[in-house]
Image (tube, rainbow, N blue to C red):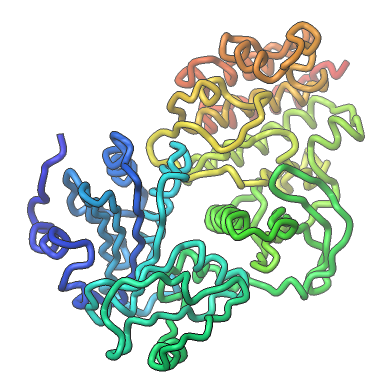
Length: 514
């Protein structure tokens, strides 16, 4: 049972937020930044689940929490509040920075992490269509104005896309303008030009009072990754490599080097909602990949915001799926085991970083080399982190999935953990046997609609058939990975140990490749 009011050291700070979400006293904070979520209603248990996830956030100290709020502190000295008003259904995330001088954007680590936690909880529980999200003007807060200008998140995103995060217009800081809440949409258009106003004072205020997006929302301005932002004009685009539901991958040249460009489909549809959603996907993927440094995971190289695309190193050998389906390469056991080991190494690292992939399949595994005996050179690398997420407790639901690689608990919309990646790994290991496409053997038996029938069968325990001549150790690994109960599946570290033992056994007495 959560306490109704904060206790201990949080009591004094709490009084600034009890009467009004934007109460007096906010001017005392340094470099303020905030995010306001306006729900039509807050689903039962939402805030409790949020606090539960916050308590598990890495590198964050929880100073106090109560029924409608939580206070956290980062190692860089920022204090971040999350306060819920159960009368107005408003959720406010507010940060104050006590120690300055950090790398640009880094001093808001707790703020960005808390926002990511809230957004993930909203996305995973299908609440995205029931709220409005605003960025309160930091300039107004610094001036202690009673009703800060509220910039809709969508407007901030379009500003970032069109103008690379240049200043937005706030009309509240001029003394001649009454201090009342105004809609920023009245002064913003897709062409990033504010409309002429009849009131001369407002025109002068609009010209004078511009607030950089980097001071409003470092996460939307991508401040922490500004060194990786490049102009699309620097790219010389090549041929299409692959295409998915949300993006298309092209080869290209950047500064004389061949790269792979993942271009979001937003450049084909210019609606504001579609652009905003695509930006969130880019922002999410850039944020996650930038934290990963491992030989078996692709690294972020650069990104563009107009059009929206992410740039990676180019792997000319292609994906594992291409070798399984198009090139029909016949794998030896040495190749199978080494590919599986590299995938397991990448997964084990990913899970140690409190992340989950959620879309592991042969299409999202790139081949870097076929020299399987050189353990210093990675053979396989994980890619496409569009559905990946930071592990904050357990999840429920996912925006998109492919039933042939997805764990049954996801299909049942039950709560799930990183063990869904282990299930998918088992399916990929089955693919490496080159028997065919997962579950294709049941197509005629199940008939149409194949997907809905297949999901029911998978939930009921159906799995692809493993050949009789498969080595018992490898067969055991696959069967353990796709167990129906997640707790019965091995973790990434155990998979690595199992596969290293298989590789050693295969080297001493080669397995039959027939």
